[in-house]
Image (cartoon, rainbow, N blue to C red; front, top):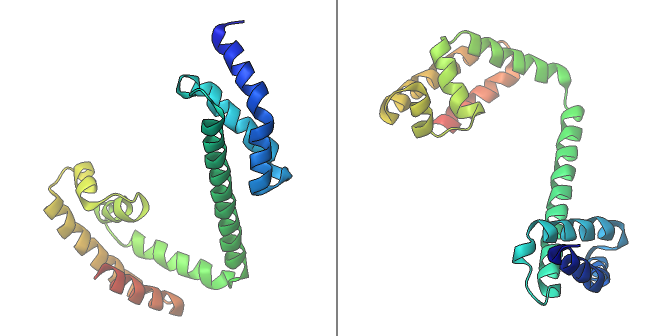
Length: 175
């Protein structure tokens, strides 16, 4: 057994119960085993960072792991709520609105679609998108403004009443 693995085994034997008790006191028994396992996996990966005494550091790691687990659970619950909200909506209207947007995008040139996609779907800033296109940020902003105006115009011709409110929202958002 190497010195590192022997030291880790000693730390594990001395601290596991206390880390587990801490996690149980914070979140209950249901998650304690998972959090303790992750805590010691992190300790092994970052073994050179583990100070002596190790317990305070391990408790800090366990606290962070627990916090990350809680955040992940909140995200899952939020996503589930969003999905429930989508299933409660009128699907026919949603499909019609989506079709109107797709048709409006199809009415644009390839270059205009690319500008909108880089900013709206890829989340790039105009400066970064300008690098992709190969133009200055100022030129990109002008092109993007024109593409947005053409999209709004194309959406105005969409027959779906709900998309008309979406056009107003887009117009306000992009102004």
